[in-house]
Image 1 (cartoon, one colour):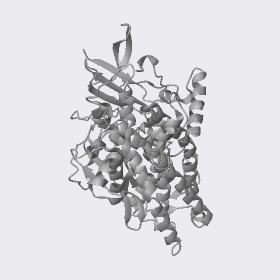
Image 2 (cartoon, helix red, strand yellow):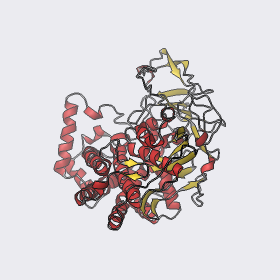
Image 3 (cartoon, helix red, strand yellow):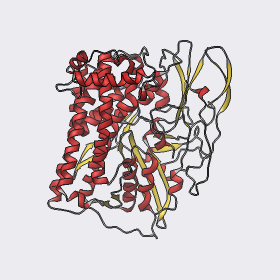
Image 4 (cartoon, helix red, strand yellow):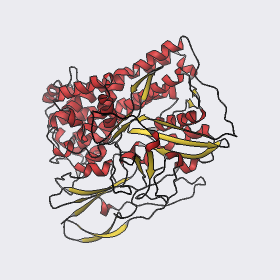
Length: 573
């Protein structure tokens, strides 16, 4: 007899995500539904606005990757108006992008996803001296893993436990059978978890050097950047360099070794190694390092065939809403996209708990609409985006900067290249991407300094002809994958605006043909050890670094309440 598990909400993510799965008698997932449960409507808010304000509105899409949407809104308008910013501006944007990626990826692993791999309670029984020795297996000079430091970390968490709770680690499936790190390895990762909290402050300051503040930096403008005085101040440039080197040190001596450690420990865990899901991959070029040099390139891989990388055809991108809470179901190119809500809600159902008691609950309508996220498709196909797609495509294209790190990681872990197509692979690729940025990001810094010696231009001039119609887009790669913003301008104002974000691609519901999105497809065939503690589901979903706030964009400008929502504790798995 099949059973249904509802995990609502998925925690340690940005936004509100509900996942429902159907499992058979062997606890194997046979069907899955990914449902985003809140809508925000920023595309509607942008209509009728001055296009030069687009970036300042779109950066409010998310409180984490504010720079991504800020830049996307600015570049989409520049593309529409035919503006090419000066090289100084482009390289400055890359320096800010460095800060974003070096902030986002470590925080995702340690604060959001790492506890799916690291058993905090196990760390309390570790021998700090043995743990310190263990750290040298993964790094020549391990980060914050001296025996005294590890004992201090252990004592700090034991103090929480002595009070009857674990503080920030209070909620977790500790002791779950799919945890595979030893107590000493768990203690190493726990130390780095706490160190990452300190690193967050430094990398936020790094963004603010040229962005004025973080989150929601303020220095981008249509045509270039406004942080002229900072760029011409050697002390500000020096401050950026020092902070970059500090963050890169953490990446190389903590983040990278911890993923090598996890890669070896979890190599035989089927719940993290056999879940490719959607094997169509999509990425787009990002990180301009020089006048004609980019760190990452664009490409499409279909059906997991890494022997051939296809060029991207933007005309093949569509979004449809057959299973999404919108009025218009047909697949539309983003330039023509519509965002008119049509909420049909959930349906009533009866559930049986472990004591054989019946209770009523709400479940998704399998035959109707069930998510605020649309279904983006490329040539009618669902696509997986994110660091896995970016690293695999660039590796397949022979990107030397990427290949160098990938091959080192495979050698250090002993994993085959095929292991990348999994939850473990997605998590590792996020770290690999951060290391590629840490290893190469200063090329943009050095080229910027060289260019400033002969050219101090930071902003291009332009005009907006109210008698003309314009359309343009930004497509690029951001921490969670391929992001695109699409704008139409008429009478000098925004006529239509659509944001197709990474978590829209990955958290997509089924489309008209019944094809699942990456989250859903990745869960099919997953065996769950304990239905009351579905750690496997959470670990798989977290590997994508979900940002549902990005994917479902309502705000009433008069401050009126639009709706209220309550999460029933009875429905939590």
